[in-house]
Structure formats: structure tokens, C-alpha cells
Image (cartoon, rainbow, N blue to C red; front, side, top):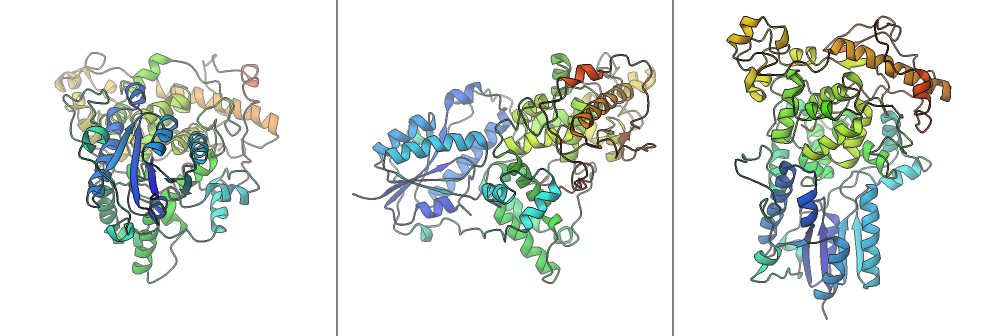
Length: 563
């Protein structure tokens, strides 16, 4: 009787640097690579067609690469807990391998599968390769708690030892004597499904801006590394009209789906930097885009409420408004602010937006203008954003809404000035909001202020062809800053923290980011939540010590773009 193995793909959709798969082929007669799709989930989930399309392209690419090894990808319909007991028996399996997933839901799911495998006498191989570090070891070194500031996280990883090298690619040589059985009816039984089979309407669907798959990911990595001058003089990327568009060197969706190994990216950057800089040690900022990802993974790994406000021990409890109509306008790009609407339109069409554009729309939805919970924005990003994953998405939304990690609530993005500084001519607006194409640059960011003759000449009358602004930004942001001030004052009372010590007394805005003094009054705003209203909703939250330096977080933008 031979030894037969299954490798279970989830994330980690690649043949390079896949240690679980590499180990699984050692000393066995056969291996089958499987991916499990739940057709019911596909038909009822909120994930947009762009995200499903990207995933299916990733699976098709894996299948194509496996064909070169005289094998195929086995796409199984069903749920893992139902599928595996059947496959263990049908294929006479003695070994199961998969990549470790650090997120709470995934750990719970994997514990169930491990138990089923043990009961069936199947050996289980689990290896870490989606992250640079072992999250459990990192947390253990921090006394059993996740690091909750980026500075402290950096200190911890500096003590973790070197990142493990990527393992070699799966090839016919690494396969050895192991074979991958394929039957003539494989395509009918185990082929990658189409979007139509999963219940999506594809008529009029345009070609993907971000093609999925490992092959595309590795090609993009090479183009990314061709920018030697950028690597040698590494600086945080600037934002301009060109950077707002999808780049052929962008990597973030490929890291999220595991088409590209974070370890391979890490060592390629290191190698190139040392070559250009004559073997000098690269700065931590070179890996900022990877380390921020690791930071949020660490923060969320043992917190199943990480994507919620209530019951989340690291999240400030804020009495956000419930306003489905306003939420829908924001999500559909109908706020009346062209900068915000163009960003949300690009997100819905392409599944990606620049990370500073994400900051702008997140601030607008939450503490900036609409005072709607970050959880609602997170759900929209989870639906539409190709690179959204549970930990990073929730972590970023808590941060940008000043619900955790970041406390400088007096910084507020202006939905007119920020865009105007970034793209003064308004080309980005015209690309995604063609209804405003006729507006001159002077008025394209605030078309409601354009004279009537200018509006008519542009064939776009505000309030008729394009909506009026849904809020008065200056008034709404001042009101919301006062709300945040009261919340933080209440937290100071409870926690004994000097949370307002960093609020500037005479702030001055720059770069499209508006600042207001914490002492500034807001005439005529009688609906600011009072202390009694706020008191009952604060006690479930926890805030971090502001004296622990937060300079690596927030508007300092040490995160480097994977865009």
C-alpha cells in the first residue's frame, strides 16, 4: 500500500516558497493539490465579482503550473469538514499538509480538520509561510500579549532573529518519485469553476486591471525590483495623479492571496539593497509594507473580536451614528464630493485604491464627516478590495477612525483640499466621474461653487446631474472633532491618561489635512454628545498609553506602499 498525500491550498496560492507542500511530497507515492470552494458561500457571500474573479484566476494559474508537472489542481465543492473525511477514504490518504493561517476563524477551522485527520490516522503537516514571523512566538516573547504600537512591534522583531529563507520552488526535481494522479474526466469533476457557475452575471464585465496568479505576481516582483534607484534611496512613496492609478508593479493583492511569498519579497529587497548600497545593512523602513502587515496580523491573531467594536478589548467604544442612507451614498460614490466619489468608484470598478486614498474615504465616513462606524466601512472594503484581509482591513479601519492604535483625532482629511493638492488638474476625477469631465480644474473638486454658467457649459448642473454635497464639511468635521475630544476626555477620566496633551493649541493645516484646536468652540452645535451619553459606552474599551511613542503610526506614514 502506497503513501498518499493531499496539500490543501487556501492562501499561499503558489508553488514557490511553499514549505508545507514541499515537505508533503517527500517520501510519498502520490500527492493531490486541492482547493475547496463552497458553492453556497459563493452564491450568498458579499464578496464582489472582482474578488472572486481574482481568486479564480489564481486557481487557474496554479492549475496551469501543475500541468507542467503532469498534474492538475483538484477543485472540490463543499465544506472542509465534510470534504476531507470522504477524500481520506477515497484516495487512501496518509498525509495532509497546509500553510498555517494565524487568523482566529482559520485557527478554529484548522483545529477541526486536524482532529478529523488524526481520527482517520492521517499525518498533518502545517508550516508558516504567509507571514515573516511566527505570530505565537512573537506574542509569547511579549509576555503573552500582542504588541499594540508599531514601535514596540519593531523592537520585538529585532529580537526575533533573522527571517527564514524561502524554500525552493516545486519542480519535477523536487517532486522526486512522487506522482500526481489525474483522470480523463478531471476537468468535469475537479476543474476550476467559472464566475457563471458560481452565479455571477458577467455580461459587460471588463477585463481585470489586476490579473490573478503566481505567474503574474512573480513578473510584477521583477518589475518592482527593476526600480533600483527607488530601492537604493528608499523613501515613502509620494502621492500624485499617476500613483492614484493601478501600477504594473503593484503587489498587495498578490501578497494577500499568497500568490507572492512575503519571504521571497523580503529577501529580494534585501539582496538588491545590499548590491546597490555595497553590502550596507538595509533600514527597517525598506520592509515597512511587510512589517505593517505583520503588525496587524499579530494584533488580531488571538482576538476573535478584532473586527468588531463591541467586546474588542483594544477598541475605543464610540457611539457612532446609524445612517444607512448616508452609508449607501458613501459606498456608491454619491456623496457630492468628487474626490471621495472618484475613489469609491475606482474601488468598485477595479478592486483597488491607493493607500492614502483609503485614508481619505475612511476618515470621511467615520470621524471626519459622516460619523458612521468603522465596521461599516470595513465591510465595504471586505466586499470590494482585492487586498483586503481580515486582520489588516480591521486594523487599518480602527486606526483611521481613531478607535485604536492612533489618537490624533484633530487631524482630519479635507475632501476637497487633499485631492486638489494631489492632482491639481483633476484628471483622476475626470477618469472615474466622466459626468464632471467638462469642469475646469478650478472647480472640479468643489463644483457646487462653480457659477451657473460654468455648470451649464460643463453639461453638469449640481443637484441635477451630480449630487450636492451631502454634508457641510467644515461644520461636520468641527462637530466630530468635538465629539472625539469628549470621548477622549472621558477616557482620560477613566484611565488617568493625559490623552489630550498632544492636541495643538494653535494648529495649522497642511497638505489637505485639516487641524482644529481642541479648545476651539463650535457655535450652534447643540447636538454634540454630552458626557452622560458617552459615559456608558466607553467602559468596554481600552486605550493605549499615549506616552509610548506613536511616531511610527498615523500621519507619519512610515508604512510603505505595496500599491
